[in-house]
Structure formats: C-alpha cells, structure tokens
Length: 217
Ligand code: B12
Image 1 (cartoon, rainbow, N blue to C red):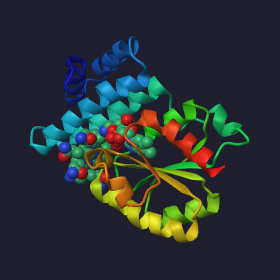
Image 2 (spheres, helix red, strand yellow; image 1 turned 180 degrees about the vertical axis):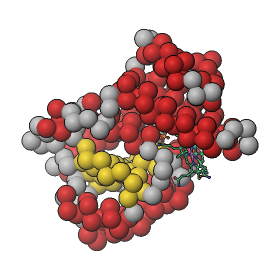
Image 3 (cartoon, protein in one colour; image 1 turned 90 degrees about the vertical axis):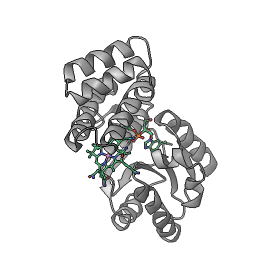
C-alpha cells in the first residue's frame, strides 16, 4: 500500500475530512481522478474493511469512511445525482442504460461507475438498491438495453444468476455487465452467473458498453 493510501486510511479512521480532502486534492494534482480512486480510495477503504474484520475498528468507522469518500468523490468526480447534459439530451443512437445494486448496501462503486459513464456522455438511470423481482419489472418497463450491476457482497454477485434467468425469459435482448470485488476475486464467476460481460474497475465500463452496443447493431 502506498504512503498516500495509508495516510488516507488514517484520515478516514479518525474521521478527519479536511485531511482526507487535502490528500485527494494533492493526488489529483498529479493523477487522473479515476487513478486516484484505484490507487488511493479503494485501497484505503479495503484496509479499513480488513481492520474491521480483524476487530481493529468499529463498524461506525467503516460507515463514516464510506460516507466521507462518497462526499469527497462527489467533489472530485462530480455529483452523480445532479442532472448532466447527457441526461437532458441523450444522443439519438445511445443505448438505454441503467445501473443497480442487488440488495447490497455498498453503493460507492455504483456511484463511481455511473459518474464515469455520464462524464463520457452516456445517460444512465440509477435504480439504486433492488430485489431481482423489482429490477426485472423496471428493466422491462424502461426497455433497458444495457444493465450495469455493481456488487461487493458475494450473495449479491450470486443473485445475478437468478436475474439472468428472469431476463432470459422476459427481456432477452437486455445485455448485463457485472462488476465489483467478487468478480475480481474469482475470474470465472461472471460466466458462472451468466452475465454478458464483466468489468474489473470503473475505467473499463465505457469500453464494455460500447463493445456491447456495437455487437447489438
Ligand atoms: C464502506 C463499506 C461499508 C459501508 C458502505 C457504505 C456505502 N454507501 O457504500 C457500510 C458501513 C454500509 C457497510 C456495510 C456492511 N459491510 Co461493508 N465494507 C465497506 C468497505 C470498507 C469499503 C467498500 C467500498 O466502498 N469500496 C470502494 C469502492 C469504490 O470499491 P468497489 O465497490 O469495489 O468499486 C470499484 C470496482 O469494483 C468497480 N466496480 C464496482 N461496481 C462495478 C460495476 C461495473 C459494471 C463495473 C464495470 C465496475 C464496477 O468500480 C469501482 C471503482 O473502480 C469494504 C472493504 C473492502 N475490502 O472493499 C467493506 C466490506 C465490503 N463490508 C463487509 C461487510 C461484512 C459488511 C456488513 C455485512 C457488515 C455488517 N455486519 O453489517 C454490512 C453489509 C451490508 C450489505 N448487506 O450489503 C465485508 C464483506 C465481506 C465479504 N466476504 O463479502 C468487507 C469486505 C469488509 C471486510 N474486510 O470484512 N460496509
């Protein structure tokens, strides 16, 4: 782990927002925002999680670390809840896109992926946290072309299997891209659950969507 990521971890554990902001601002002076996420934010949060797992910090510190990163990343990458020009005037040939987490409370990955898509000009509906049943209903109603599923907990990653079965019957043309930690740990999992594509980090999502879009033409 880099010195900056360790410093960010310590700032998060002591709930020192100002120090965390300074560290992120210093990093963005020399690195692209997505690289800051991959090299600093994700490793710092992973360390916070590992510490909690070993009894070294409280769940409230994990929670606050996530909240602080959410706030700071809104400043760094732009707030994904604010309408962007791509939401108001989506390109005529752009696919209908949505992003979701399946009964998982880890939302930061989804937020980052959505921001990356929007900053590359794609409008993405945010379905938030859903059950498989409610999600299938939404996908059918909105006629979604490409669904992005963000996961952190293994049970959420495994729920994609049921989702794929249901979509196969009710929305067979919808393509599903999965991403998140469970798929990084097991590189066969995305195929086992029947997804159409996997992304190992947020930087891959635009290329994957464009590839699926080309395949659909
Ligand atoms: C912050 C956090 C929380 C916060 C979440 C707040 C929030 N709004 O998100 C809170 C406090 C709510 C929380 C709760 C819990 N947590 Co928690 N949490 C974390 C922590 C520390 C960081 C997660 C995070 O935000 N990472 C940063 C983001 C940016 O990374 P990411 O999601 O992987 O996303 C990146 C990529 O994967 C990719 N990506 C993500 N999605 C997608 C999608 C597509 C399509 C693509 C292309 C790419 C992509 O892009 C992102 C940027 O590159 C992790 C530690 C860890 N090792 O990850 C534990 C961790 C995930 N939590 C854990 C646990 C156990 C829990 C709880 C069960 C605790 C409890 N007893 O209540 C609950 C479960 C809630 C639930 N049912 O979902 C465990 C999971 C263990 C396991 N084996 O699955 C971890 C690993 C901690 C640990 N070491 O034990 N948690």
